[in-house]
Length: 430
Image (cartoon, rainbow, N blue to C red; front, top):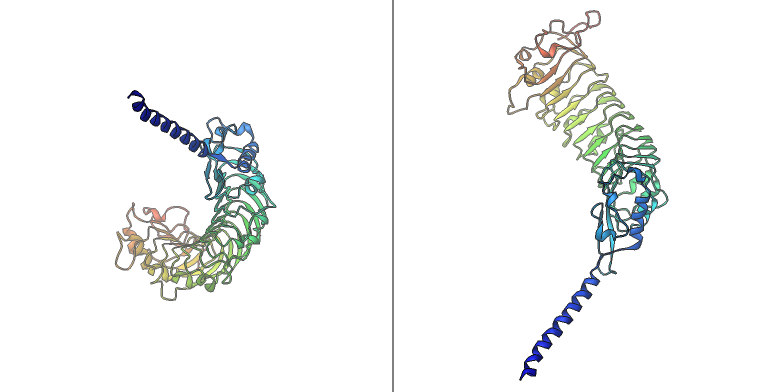
């Protein structure tokens, strides 16, 4: 009787033992193991960084290669297990913290991580040339090397039509030379930031980059024309910022029309010449137009008088603009920030300008001006009565350095640089 009752117990114990073995086997199968080549690439990155610049609290200090990177690194590495493959995990992302690391970028990081989708070394002190000779990993979508000290030319070999790159950040480095034309092969690229380097030469034709929406080239020494003809830039662009370069030539209406989605155009501090086309004021999307400190000589009136303009900000300061203040500016319904300072405008200040600056709130036709900069011209005549009603906490207005000797200093907009002398001012035609 006792032996028959013990049998079920023995069976249960045997089943439990088998289950434990199976669990241990499953656990062993589930151990995360980084692909050896990927681990070696990560080790090469750490080895390329000066150990003296790796703070104890930093992410890179926690990379202990006695442990498995995908299983044990607490930060800076992202991995995944490819389906229908071996048990190896592959590195898909490397993102270092801005701890002040100083070192170089080994070629193996780009050449030996085929599943890499994200690489960021931003805001450190990496230096030397960018790796050349091998293209970017085909899966790489974001490359952020901004805010370092990389130097030399941008390698053309990095860019191929097979690339999946969507975001490229190389700003705030010491890169020189021309932008390689191969960059135009990046059909998936949405954002390219190359600002604040030492890049030279002309901009390669980019019309094939049909995903590109945001382009920043500011603070380089680029030259040639930018918007002198349609087709140089892709029609997908939403924002073009190229402050502080040497771009020259005219701004053509046809080139603007070929960029129907553009909301921001900032060419401040270049050598753009000719007239500001009236088409810029009737553009269907353009909200910020910044053309200050160029060599523009005229402003065309908007074809519809400004009524359809989407502009919120207009800066034409520091050019060579002559004639009267453009009437269409006062008719642009959404315009709030106006910079027409440091030009050669003459004549009186339109009442419509003054009304927009002094208004307490929007009307059914327009919003008030919150900033109206007219200093440094040759404006003359009587001060519009609406400006005398401007409140101290109202719009920022400046009429300094004009031909308005009776502009009362009790008004803040009359203060600043003194008015020009009678000998300097031409005959006034209000």
